Length: 519
Image 1 (cartoon, rainbow, N blue to C red):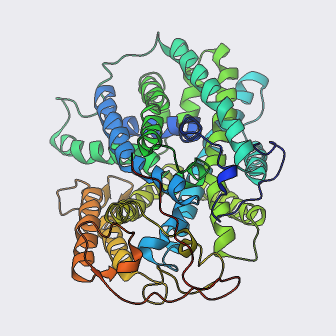
Image 2 (spheres, one colour):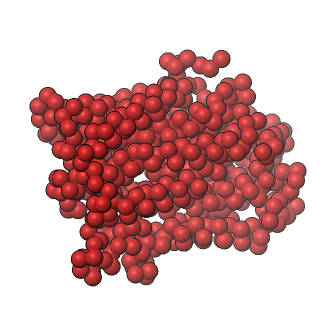
Image 3 (cartoon, rainbow, N blue to C red):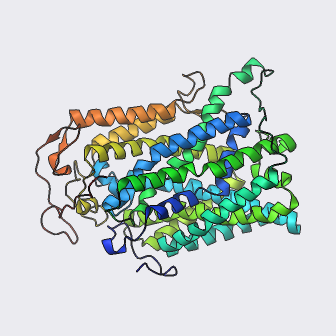
């Protein structure tokens, strides 16, 4: 039977026993959708309007970003059921026993960014709503208290673990969706789909020349939301039985991101209303979407806004923070899952206050989102191509070598590093950063070579795919890293497998457990 909600989760990143793997693809959908069906996603949905796009242009950028991001993300869901562990640990097979720390770093970056975004947006909405309802002063102290209390609630859920988090998201998916639909009623009378933005026929040539950079930049901000789940999907899907058809797991991840069009379009539509009725709140010099939303809201919708901020923020915060605490408990062996969660949460809270009171909030969000895309997407490409060339076969014991402080095994490669996957990742990530161009936010050293258009993401995707496959052909991996069916497209070489040695090691290289048959 599943553990009780109030029982602190005992599992870390070791392979989840089959008896404990009771989750379903529907649970994966709830967690992935619930983590994005929130107020912070509305803030990301407002960026096309902040970038000067019309509503229809912004809608096109939003749909393109969500669809592209969902297609990139959904294959990452299969690693959890196959290996019974998180995606960072699974990456040992492609980046090496030590190279798996790349996934841990990316999950930390993502957790800090999106946990901070959830606390910022939800805290601002709660303070703003309390100001309108009860006359609470909107001073620094009010924001500090709101951020601290909200962060503490999220940390408490993460400490209890997977079951409690799943319970919160089950509530959040339904309640937040109903509140968004209620919001559609609240703002229907003010919404005008013909909102024109700044790129009109009457705009000067300099303004019109910024349309494509702004459109692509807005698309990438939206795309960052689904891509941000890439390092986390395995944290939740590892509780799904290995016998579950892969198409159902992948489909659940894909549909969970399509469903986020609800909060994205809500943010886009309300931002266009704010730009019309209260334009001071979308001033590029000091944008304040949350304040603008409260300014245009009817009085009866203040309480639903506060509820939406509370419920949605809890969902985003927990899904962001849980996995990173889980993974860092294996990177730093002296830290239990609970202590690692508290440590990462404390670091995130520091960033929250520095970013909110010491930095440009919008610039902080867009820059972090850009870094997440350019660094995480090539890592995901390496993982997915690695899964394909290995035909979905992994050795669960060899994946756990780093976590157990051991040495050797099928994925030891060169002193614990698979330089093929590592090279493909860092070269592609660096290329993406160099060519990134988000107008007014972040421009890489080579970002102007494409006339202001951001080509960083497509370049990083192409470089990762071509370079990784080329390295697998030119510098074959050991045959032992592949399953009984052998390699697909890649070449292999027969070399001895170093035995697994160290604490608790059994003789040999462990007992490989083949993945469930592909379906």
